[in-house]
Image (cartoon, rainbow, N blue to C red; front, side, top):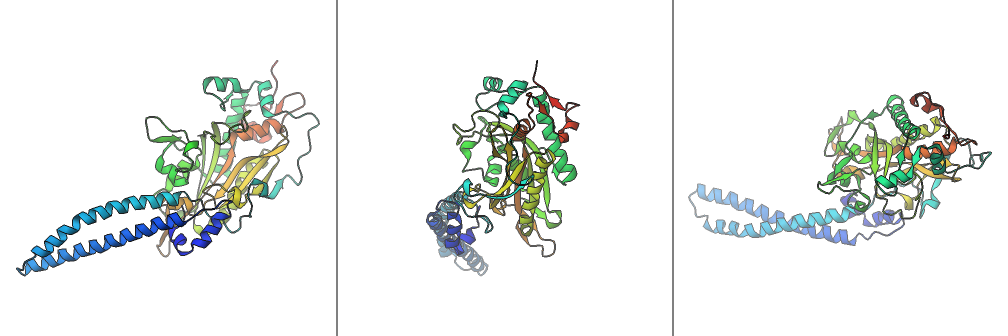
Length: 429
């Protein structure tokens, strides 16, 4: 959530930064609501001060044996108006909060300008430059590879749940589990993250805190009988571990890694990626979350992104890193790098990780703060998150990049310790 004081002091600059996202955000309604709120607040405070003054005067008069009846009548007359004002003020505060919560984060000054993903700026490729060389045979898509190997069962997923669900069988399930274990071990043992296992269900407050509510409610799976939602990403429960907390400065940065299943309606993806594992209602992801001092969050984003890149490099999967332009930023992000992996079956790069610095945007919604060691001053901390990485899309990348001419798939060296001695998956029969 944006700083209301900053909007009040420099609305034109805020509007310009918001406009760089590719659409205009009129702050006039918010400003009008805030003006009304401040007027109600001022009148309420004046009447409260008068009530307190009368109370003191009544006490003095009674102590002196004087007549306080007129003052008591005046104080009694203030009661109904004060009650009305307090109710109006609560309503107006909720309206201001609702209007403020609809505004996205302000892009960082270092984010490249642009309208959409076509204007994202490539930062680097691994390995080297240029697209990877074509395979010496016709590369298949992962769904064809998986079905021929008997490890991806899309029909079974549709049977038991519906479209955009998949059953992993045999070595497909083992490979998925191996990827999860490999990522968790890499981040916790080598990159210094603390592994956590959060709930897969969260309340509305948690989703508001990280920016999924109210804007993206249609993308969420809600429980019928309880005020809970299935998580769209582990970013939600893990970041909310500091909601409402004052963290001592010496404990920062906090670095968490978590594996969870994630659940999304994909309401805006009609007709897109209808085959395969790219866009599922349920998928596994290993998530990285940083909680930092404000002055360290930009450097933390660079490190978090490098940590995610390490997963792809250890698996020897060709990929590139791009800086998202202003028009392609997510709602809560002030700066984002996407990792895109090469898929030879599709002949293109596809997003596999998104690493973002949200600054104090989520922290303000969560009221998550840091207490400075020297000054003891309390201020909003900064939060970051990134996929470290999406497990299903990594499985896709392994199948397509490690496919062989005979239809088999070689297991990457980094995963072999987790595969129980299996180094290649061969077609059945």
